[in-house]
Image (cartoon, rainbow, N blue to C red; front, side, top):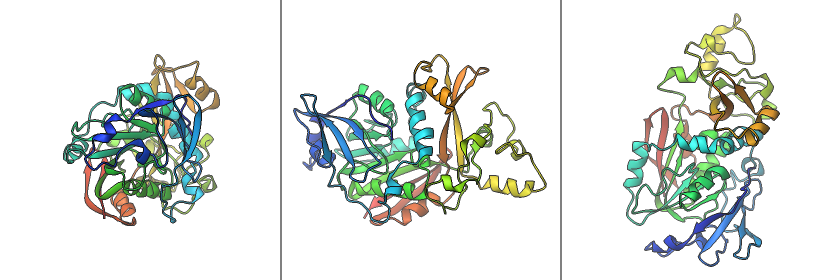
Length: 378
């Protein structure tokens, strides 16, 4: 679990402009009391069932408050679903903390269909952005109010420095009371969750935190990438060592032991499957079967090249290199981090959502190599 390293100020003055009169951090963060117009969130722990949040009072003394108002769906609230798997800690949380400033510098363009969704919301709507990253969508519709959260304290600090209302939180354990928001978005987040149950739980949470009639927009990376060459730069995860996955039995390939992976260089030009090597195994008489598997591959490591001049060699990057969680590419002058992705096949996201109570799919579409759905809470 990634913990915040500094208090992040959340101003509450804007919260009281909502005409429904239900805003304010007292109701937003189940049970957390704010003093003197603000509260500072330093930690949301996704590894315990009580959804604890750590608050700093004005005198600097921390107090722990139980978000007891959060209602759980018994089908997906088990410890195994809420506990963060190691693959996510190492290849999602740790990576985004390490690359946050560089990542943020590349994330400024707004996707037109996300912007259109946010612009279509009624004036005065409260929008919850789960997995807000650097906050590029926060405040996009100036007639709405936005609250963002992300698992990465480094990205949340970037948002906070820009004046956004944000906190550190886990997508499968959102710290908002039931029915709090008018709408919610989850942009390029669910594909970082490593089990089907955790992905379903994240959707349940998005539905839970909006009002009846509220809309939820979700986008995820697709198997069907428009740029076929891009996929050759990813490292597919082989179907080995299933015991390393916390919830075996899902239909798609699972992660192998990490030491057996051979990274695919980002400079690879060919899109032919024969150039993809998994676990240092050369092609054999079963090539056709292997190629069929690769066509159905959904688990990948996707590289992020952090330039040496952007890397904190004396800090997190040095630690990552020492522990083998990152490698050096002297040719590109970069520290290379691998990010875990489960890319979605056609109909998979809609199928997950269809199994959730109190929600119906009102739209689904393919946009820029992403599968996208809009849900309405019923």
